[in-house]
Image (cartoon, rainbow, N blue to C red; front, side, top):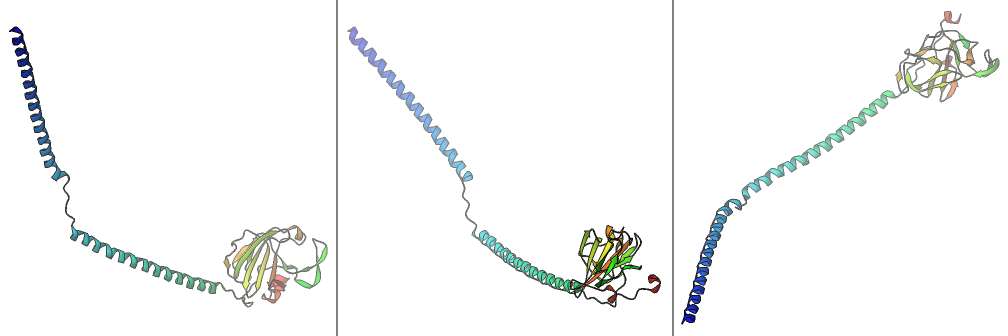
Length: 251
C-alpha cells in the first residue's frame, strides 16, 4: 500500500515538473516571438527612410547632357582660336625678323667716314714695300696705320657698323672688329675701356673706347691707335676710304 502511494507521489511530482517546464518554455517562446516581431516592425519602419531608392530624374540628366555639349563646343572653338592666334603670332614674328634682318643689312658708304682719332701717322699703311718699325728695329710690311694719340683720348667709329669681335693680343692689345657692310671691316687696336660689346651696332662718330698704353711692339712709337681696314678679309689702304686729314694734324 505504501509502495503504491510512493509511486503515485513520484508520478505526480514528475508530471508537475514537466508541466512547469512546458509552461516556462511556452512563456519564453512567446516572449522571444514578441521580441522578434518588434524587431521586424522597427526594421520595416527604418528601411524606407534608410534605403529609399529615388527614381532617376531623366529630365535632369538630359539637361546636364545639353549643358555639357555647349562646353565641348566652346572648348573646340577655344582650341581653334588658340591655333589661329599661334599662327598669327608666328607670321608676325617672321615678318618682324625679316624686317630686322633688312634693317641690319649694312652698306658701307666711304663718303660717310671719319678718322678714328686725329693725330700724326707714326707708321703708314704699306703692303707693297717694307717700312721701318723703330721698336722692333726691323723693316716689315704694315697692313694698318699707326696713328699717334694720347692715353685716354677718345677713339671714334670710322663708319657705322656692327661689332663682331673683341679680342686681346700682345701686338695690338685690346682690339675691336667692326663690320661695315659690303665686305668691309674696320679694325681698331691699342684700346681700353670699351663702350660697346660684341653684337652692338655703332654709328659713325660714336666713341668705341679710349687710347691705352702702347704694347711692347710700339714702345718707341709711343701711345697710338692701330687702325686697319679690310675688304673681303684682305687689308686695304685706309686712306682710300677716309676724308683727307686736316693739315694742322699732319704738321
